[in-house]
Every structure is written in structure tokens, then in C-alpha cells.
Length: 160
Image 1 (cartoon, rainbow, N blue to C red):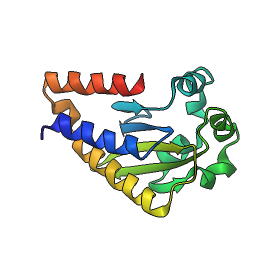
Image 2: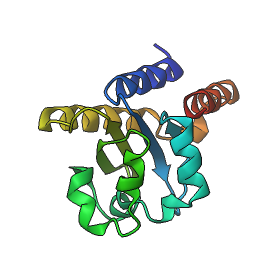
Image 3: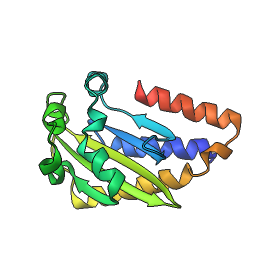
Image 4: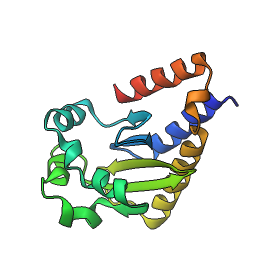
């Protein structure tokens, strides 16, 4: 399996475990990810962007300073802007955040469900898959131009 196929398979696995969508910021440097994959519904992504919620998102704030995994409900006390309440208006009722630093590179992700909260076992699976995706995309700048184009197209496809 090629690197591109491996990355696509991991993204598919994460998508299957996130019925209401996800956002994955891979290899964040100076608050900007090398790649951003999103599968949330377009109306939520538009609202999130137009309202500038990234600056207030508790998962992003927590993920820039911590590593580990948690449920959105664990961050309710730092959600001064009401990001999670706004998300509920778009069907994002429950979610999880995962932040990891491997090989001196940070990845932050949020996963959402509309039906129920994630179990501890599901959080472990998400973290394991995310770590594999993080490792698979390390040194991404060393990919061939063709593979970089394919990954960018996959990012665009998932995001839109």
C-alpha cells in the first residue's frame, strides 16, 4: 500500500468513527497545520469560519497546550464563547478532542457524534488511528510532487 493509500485508509477509518464529522489539524506549526482535514457539514464549517470560532474553540485552545484525549463536556468550563452550544445547532451534540505530540510535531483533532458520547474504548481507538495518521504524514514535505498533489486533493475533497 502506498503512503497516499495508507493516509486515505486512515482518514476513512476516522470518518467512520465520527458520524457527525471531524476536523484534524496535522503537524501544527505556529498555530497553522500542514494539512487540515474536515468532514463536518458545510453549514457548520461556514458558520465556524464566518464567526471566527477557531480563536475561541476550547478543543483548539486545549490542544495547543496539552496532550491526551477528552470529551467536549470536559472542556465546558472554558467554553466562554459557547462554541459547543453553537455546534449543537448544527447537529454536533457530543464530541471528543485529541492532541498529541510525536517526533516533535503536534496534531490536534476534534471528532463529533449526534447520537451519544464517545466511550473510553472509542476514544482509545480514535487516538490510536490519529497517531498512525500523524506518523504516516511526518515529513510530508518529502513526498513526491504527485503524492503531495493527491494529498491536497484529498484534503479538499474531505473539506468540501
